[in-house]
Length: 489
Image 1 (cartoon, one colour):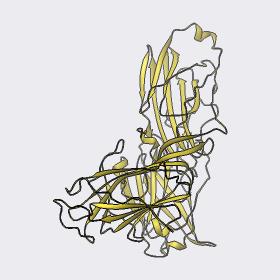
Image 2 (spheres, rainbow, N blue to C red):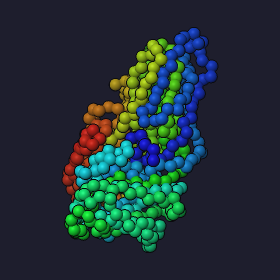
Image 3 (cartoon, rainbow, N blue to C red):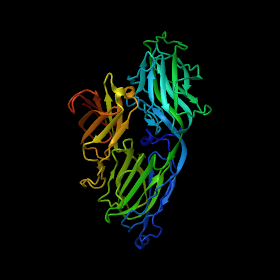
Image 4 (cartoon, rainbow, N blue to C red):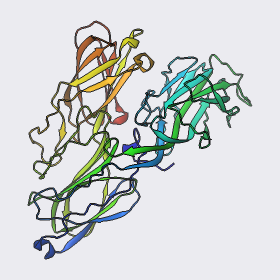
């Protein structure tokens, strides 16, 4: 597996060859009379593939835009990846489409304990691991409806002194009606407590062409060596860095992977380069610029919808925003001022420009009746103006997040992203939730808090409890992203 950019590790397995954008072929006369300097932008995390772009200095408008239509490609990567570092069962990477994945143990129990002895894996740092006490079997369900092939399953596993040291692995393509043995003996390599063993299973020859694949781990005592006697009720199993690899089809306009670039001349308030490209994991952009000062902005968008951007931007009116309904968008950005007086090599490090909002529901029963949740933002839409601090809000966004839910009792949470841009100032936020069963509205309530960029905000409480609007939920702020917060409703 190749390493991936941090910004790509929830929807990332789509890599489309980088397409150069050629602007106005005829440069203005003043450009031809000036000395030009080479500026090379290397996008951090990408292998260098140099692309030279022509400038359009003197053109006070957007000079180039590269939009792909109707193209598709099969590309390989992670279909799913769980690091468990966020202390939940949500995968860090998930293939688009199909039902949500699930992890259960002992015939339907949902694990909710995460230990500190996590194990690193490539770009995923050591942090947390899923910890299950008394597990006799673990069942993992994954939708592969959008996959064109499934190539491998990998994971790290460890256990306590009295935990299992072996397991049998089975798979099902008919939603559990029948299981086939994938590997009957999977002995741990170490008897030392909490020492990981890494496992990988080649799935290329299995022809997993169903809509879902289920994997069942049946835990066994195994060879114990120096470990204690197996205790099937008190032994602890740790699971980490679990992934399913394969290929999937990307269709432009459905699942987007775009890199937007804008370079403005400061003194002339005009664009020199502007456009968008579908990106692969190789980008090294080279431009020619005359002596001067410039504003530079790169923004990546991995989502299902285009970003909100001005049609004919100038740096004094330039902004970036995202529709609230585009709630799974992973948006990363970079902006800087550039003084060009010689050839320049500039490393571009794209940083997260959104936060994660999660509602965790503690209702003991009744969540299975919930079939739909609509989330509306009551605050003003957020936008990012990287070069002007006091730009008036140019965004009109009245979209909502409308979630159809199969079984809320299985996962007991909803998650979405809130775009905020590069600012780290605290912003007031307010969300209205409308909860529906099959036919009618069950409850409406509003929650309020504050939020800044690169934060995980958790609202925790009972979804169906009959309480006034904002009462009853606790709020957690997770500093793993840079800050965390917890609220009650």
